[in-house]
Amino acid sequence: MSDEQENRLLECVKASLGPRAIRFNEVLRLMGEAHPRSVDHYYLSLLGTDPDHRGQGLGMKLLDHDLATIDLQSCPAYLESSNPANNERYKRVGFEIVGSFQAPDGGPLVTTMWRSAR
Image 1: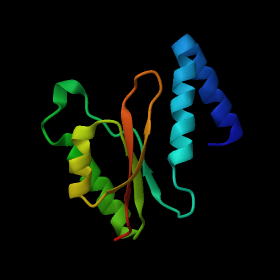
Image 2 (image 1 turned 90 degrees about the vertical axis):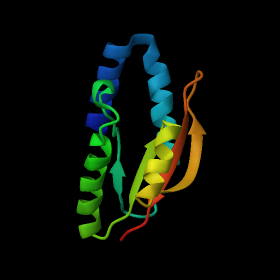
Image 3 (image 1 turned 90 degrees about the horizontal axis):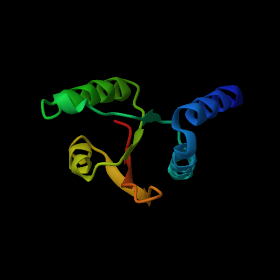
């Protein structure tokens, strides 16, 4: 994001989350520290399924589509997983665990994962 876009996001977060914005910003900081910067790659962020539609394979279909597009460009991909149940799903499509960090205030352990170019 540009500096202007980042500032707009932070203002939106403050307006929406109030005091919880501090925790949100800390999570963003931790994500930024964990994110690899040495290699160009696709960053798969905020992949999720509405609770009413979980268990139908929709998230994996979306991920498969994205990975097919990424593979056509022979690029690596990176994601963070905050749900340990998903880590095995991501491993099955070629992601490897490269690290983790603990979200603040009792938040989840976030696993960072990398998939090499294909």
